Every structure is written in C-alpha cells, then in structure tokens.
Length: 305
Image 1 (cartoon, rainbow, N blue to C red):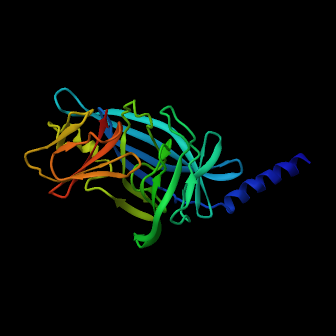
Image 2 (image 1 turned 90 degrees about the horizontal axis):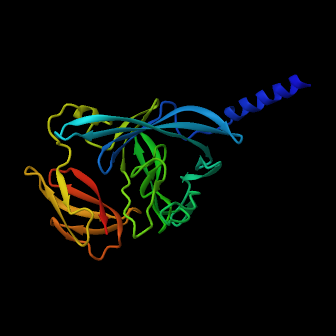
Image 3 (image 1 turned 135 degrees about the horizontal axis):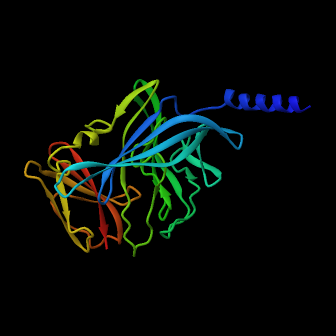
C-alpha cells in the first residue's frame, strides 16, 4: 500500500511538470541599470530552475545587485554584490502569477484590455501606501527578434504600495522600472531615496539578446580603473528642492529638453531651459529626465520638500 501511494505521488509530480506552462524560456536573463543616492550599478535576474509550490510548477528567479561607487579621488571601484531573495512565478493562460508572502498574486495579465485592472497583492507598506492596483491604458503587438509580443501600457492607481508604469511586454515584463513591482512612498512629509531602476537587456536560449541601451549590459565593469568620473554629464542643485532647481551639463553637452515624472510614470512637466520652478509640486520623490542634443538621455531622482 505504501509503495502504491509513493508511486502515485511521483506520477502527480511528473504530470504537473508535463502539463505546466512557462512564460519564460531556459537561459532567461534580465539586466537593469540602477542609480542610487551614493552608488550605481546593475541588477541581474536569472531563471535557474523549476519547483512546485502549492501544486503549481513555478519558475525560480535569482536576483543579484552589483554595486559600484566612486572614491574620494573620483575613481570607480566595485563595492560588491548583494544576493536578493529569489522570486517564484508561474503562468496560467494569459496571466503570470508571483508567489509572495505565502500566496499567489497577479504579476502581469497579458490578456488585459484598456480599462482592465489587476491587484498586485501588496496592500500596504511603511510609507502610508495602500492597495496596489495596476490599470491598462492601451494595448498593442510588437515584433522583436521575429516574435510577435503583446504589450500593455499601464499605470498604478494613486497611493499604490507597489507599482509598474509604461510598457509591459510579453516574455520579459516591464520595459520601464524592474521585473517586479517597485516600492512607492506615499508620505508627503518624508523624503525617501529609492533606487532609480531601468530595464536594459534580456536574452534566453531561444531569444537573441535585446539591449535597450547604447552600452554593454554590464558596462560598469569597464569603468574600473577609469581615472575620472565620466558617467554623469549633469548635476542638479539644490537637491532636495524647495521650489527652484538648476540643471547643469558638461561643456561638451547641451540640453534639448527636461521632463519630470512622478513615481507612477505620469508626466508632470516639460521644460526647455535649465532653470526650473517646481513650487507647485507636492512633496515627494520624482524622476527628472534630461534629453541631450547628442541623442542621449540621463535620468536622476529629485526630492521635493
């Protein structure tokens, strides 16, 4: 009798794998650049294995954060790598689920239509935020590497604890921000410095590398032993900001325009000069995007107090 039960359990295990769906392929690897308050670098996410959680065949995704900084002599150095907690996802129909806090919640719904919403399952955080609701504004299909992929343009509802913004693309997820929801600060009286994260690269064993930047996916390694701080072409002063700020660029650069977004990805203003008045903005964290005449774009976090 014991042998029969054991054999039945094995059959259930293999049947789960046989009839499972996956939304990512073997060898899947993501890269994301980030800018912190005193450091920068990249996040790397790798699909490493399958496992069963609550009867669902899940993909295990390992996350690492590679940290670089600048010393007192303006020389780059490698600070180290932080290994983050792994994430677990699975696909059912058009929907990708994420296992977090002992339950599954919707991560992406690629079958959603304009006006549809989904709940990320993040109900609160330490910064006065609430339920995390993602809403779809528009949908389209694009072709990358000869593969048609569904795209959703999404935004988070106000005061969401976790959020996505911009285009979410089938196969590799959010094209702005990070693969998993970013944290939000809803406390207007508290200035929190969070990493500014942006998608840069994706590849897997059947999908050639795509690179959304003009540099190598891990190009920060190339900065080691570079004698000068050359990555930042701009400076912002003051920051934090009470009402007015000034954006300065290097001698060899010129500003085409400056855009400011809130953390939900909503455009707050477009400016064509380097002196900006944001006195009407609510207190909090914003993303300042500087477009240069040489075609490059630089993003910085600013804090309005």
